[in-house]
Structure formats: C-alpha cells, structure tokens
Image 1: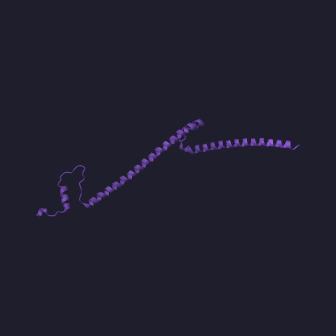
Image 2 (image 1 turned 45 degrees about the horizontal axis):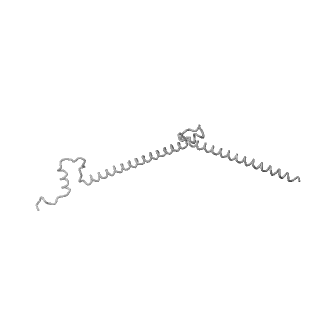
Image 3 (image 1 turned 180 degrees about the horizontal axis):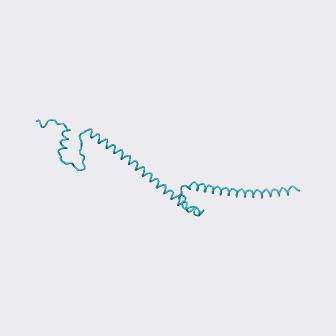
Length: 152
C-alpha cells in the first residue's frame, strides 16, 4: 500500500468531496461540518418549530372559538324560530326575535315569570272562590236542615 492509500481524516474527505462539486444543487442545503454551526442551526430550527407550534395552537383555539360561536348562534336562531309561532299567538307586542337585544333578556324572563305568577294566582283565586261558593251553599243547606229539625 502506498502513500496515497494512507488513512485520511474522514472530515477532510467530506470537505473535499463537497467543496469540489463546483455548483450548488437547487433545494439542497450545503451541509456544514462545523459542530458549532450545526448546534446553532439545530437551536434555530427548534426555535422556529416552537414558534410554529405556538401559532398552530393559537390558530386551533381561534377555529374552536369560531365554531362554538357558530353553534351558539345556530342554537339561538333555532330557539327563536321555535318561539316565534307561540309568541305570535300570545302577544303581537313581543318582538319576533326574543334574542335580538341581549340587554332585554333578563327583563323578558322577569316579565314572563310575572305573567306566569299572575296567571297562577288568578287560577288559584278562582279555585278558592269556587270552593268558598260550594262550602257556603253546603253549609247553608245543613243550617236549614238543622233548623227544620230543631223546632219539632
């Protein structure tokens, strides 16, 4: 074996191989043989990867938020459409869309609760009045029958 076949440093071999090409291949990054340069590139690429992951997470959260908003609006629209026939039959002064003004939602709920309480108290008053009428007519009959029995 001659002098030309002596063991060469593999790093020198790679440097010579890449350096003698004479042209850059498109889309191919020229590799470096410097360990510090490789560490720097790895660190830079990991920083870019972290930044991209953070942007991806933010994008996914934005998409989920918009999907939730779409589903909420669809639910409100469905509820409004379900409420509109009953609102039209009960009162013409109610707006067609009860969800149109969110500031009035508590007021509408309180108004509906007051109307329900008034209707319930009216119904209970009517029931109490009919029960009193029945009791008075029943007690009047028993008083008359007691009066008939006593004189004799």
